[in-house]
Amino acid sequence: MKRQFDADLEDLRARLLRMGGLCEEMVHYAVKVVVDRDDSHLSKVQEWERQVNGLHIDIDEVCLRLIALHQPAAGDLRLIAAAIKINSDLERVGDQAVNIAETGVYLLKEPKIKLGDIPRMVEVAAGMLKDSLDAFARGDVELARDVIRRDDEEDRLKSQTFNELVTLMQSDASAIQRGMDIILIARNLERIADHATNVAEDVIFMVLGKDIRHSAEKI
Amino acid sequence: MDMMRPMPLPAVKEGAAPENAAIAMSVRDLRAGYGAAPVLKGVNLEIREKTVTAIIGPSGCGKSTLIRCLNRMHEAIPGATCDGEILLGGRNALAIDPVLLRREVGMVFQRPNPFPTMTIAQNVAAGLVLNGVRDRALIAETVEKSLRRAALWDEVKDKLDAPGVGLSGGQQQRLCIARALAVEPRVLLLDEPCSALDPIATGRIEELLIQIKDQLTVVIVTHNMQQAARVSEYTVFMLMGEMVEYGLTRRMFTQPADKRTEDYITGRFG
Image (cartoon, rainbow over all chains, first blue to last red):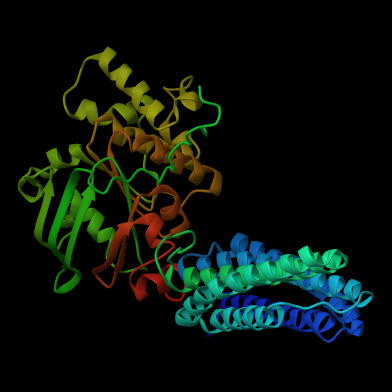
């Protein structure tokens, strides 16, 4: 017989994955505003953000209720603890996506500027986000480790983009405002990759009970 | 003071539980049962001194039998069998006179059982009087000390001559704990001491166990896993007469090593 508690945990997982799916869409369309120079996507991103914010509150409530009513232990407790943390990381991913879309809309009013490594950064960050959510759904520790390893690549691309745009701004003062905006977008993407890394770390804790955050241990 | 240097933070308290604490009792290959039916099938366990050890497991797993072996109550049952080794501070507990052993290894039962004809003070003093102590001042002093240790003194100090059975269930249970503490045992065994009590009375007993563990070793059998998690430093998980897992409580409840422990503490069976 399936216990109600197991059904509740399943429901919690499903809500988180729904929230994760929305965040993936948000990142995808936010970046389209910048790269395709198409502001029609902004309203979609904003609508999804409202849904993500609703889920953020819902999921916290579900977690608190499960703790209060069931006093979970062991794997169940680790799942709920991970869910609380992943919930807040995903909400932040949503915020970063909105920032990207809004900056993108501002940039549309300005002449085109080079995007540095932004397209590659999008690929890496979106891939990390997707895989961290897949790792959560499947309890896949190997995939989670792989996500964590990829974060260095994103950091490297961000530094490269910074350098490229700083050089551009030094040579062309009229590009400073736009250059700063691209740097902000690079920073938003790097943060998305960091949140995906956090999710992956939480997946490892959830599955193995091992806290690898801030540890020198190589993945 | 160098203002740039951050203040040292207090160390995180990991619920004491030194893993190198001295061993109060050792159980080696303990087999026990009733007639031909085995209940304990070779249990090995080292109970650390001045800690609380909780024994959990589903009904019929042998946890009460184990605790009753520790002060040799088990063998008082007709047909009961008990084989193996139990050491109390290095001495063979199975070779000590059971009456003397029970002075060092006290026990509190599921249902509070104050002596019905005795007052509160007489209940606490019963063990001393049975042991031949006649010094009234010493008895009065021990009664007060034991009732204080059992966190009952303030509630009964003005009615020490009232019958023990007139107290509430929770108070009666603390009276039984005071009675057990009066003879200064080294180990206190508790067999589901809160199962007949309401949550407030349960909370008081749990607080009291946390207080007294600085002075003696506590072993508690409980069906309530949250209680085990709250009061104990070590947890023993038993299943069908075998000890499946034994370790630090904080680890057992977040990261059990054995799948069967995980299934039990997450309520998937039992």
